[in-house]
Amino acid sequence: MKKIIVIYSRIALLYLFVISYNPLLAQHTLKIQVTGIPSLHKEDAVYVAGNFNGWNPVNPAYELKRKDGKLELIIPALKDEVCEFKFTRGGWDKVACTASGADVGNNIVKLIADTTLTYSIEAWKDDFGVVEKKHTASVNVGLMDSAFFIPQLNRSRRIWIYLPPSYQSSKKHYPVLYMHDGQNIFDHYTSGFGEWGVDECLDSIMENGRNECIVIGIDNGPKRLNEYNPFNNERFGTGEGKAYAAFVVETLKPFVDGHYRTLKDRTNTIIAGSSMGGLISYYTQLAYPAVFGKAGVFSPAFWTAPGITAATDSLAKTANGKFFFYMGGLEGDEYMNDMYEVMQQLGTRSSALIYSVTDPGGSHNEDAWRKWFPEFFRFIMADWTNYVIKTEEN
Image 1 (cartoon, rainbow, N blue to C red):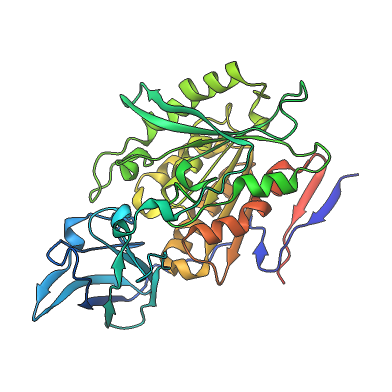
Image 2 (cartoon, one colour; image 1 turned 90 degrees about the horizontal axis):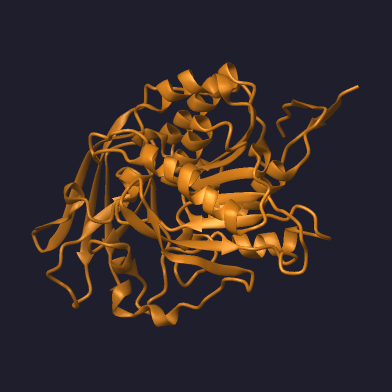
């Protein structure tokens, strides 16, 4: 007899065919004004980077213009949603911070009407230097390569590796989790706005040699919006995601399998990421079901990928692994609906096991992804043989 297990967390739901979609969202204008800026770099261009423009820190369309002694940007036709954004001077190393140099959270506003917001910028991060940040990576994290070549894209990238505590003292072979935005996975020193704490999580969750896993962190690059998108985007340009996915499958995985003791089969090969990294993780498992059997899709930027629905429609029939989806309630209804639409399509057209977490208080940031990474990891590492899943809301 098959066992039946109910999965839920405080605010987590397991979705198979549950959908809530409302495309008729109102559109509003957001006016952002900055009345105070630091004297240093006073004449530099200032940009807004947010969830409405792919978090691009140097998009000319989102540069604030000087008007009547202040900086101003008007963003028309934003849908009825939660907007999150930061101010930069053209790069994440030049982001706004507190007067003491500390990081600040996203500016957040729920749009229900045309809105004007006024801000004052205290300081810029690059005026304090990176020496104030501390390394937080555990002793189990190392650098696999500082410039690993990506032949599919003719560029190089830093690659991190986490080896389980038992790796050096055993002859075991381990599952492998591939993650994007490697700067933000293990070490606060290299991260832009905090880290996932994957190493600390795994150090604590791997008890008595169980659920041990190798983690590969692939740094992002300056063309992240293109590199992690399998499809062309009118705003961001040519998508390079198919070539990037091919790199992970055809170049990086064979190298890792050839140099470390890994379990090479699809059941033990996992891929995960957030935002654009969530998009490319979903696509890669969908496109390579014989290679990847599990995916972590955190806050996926499906809105940047016009072809993701058609890809799901054509590829889902071969998807029979596990998919973990996360979205924060503060990320906005439009992005939530985008994820639910893809989930429903995947659930209808495949035999995949889909676990979806919706956190009403969750945002689009590393703190949220760090919070839900343990839930994702337990799900993908659990043995689901002879289990049937049902849904329970609480």
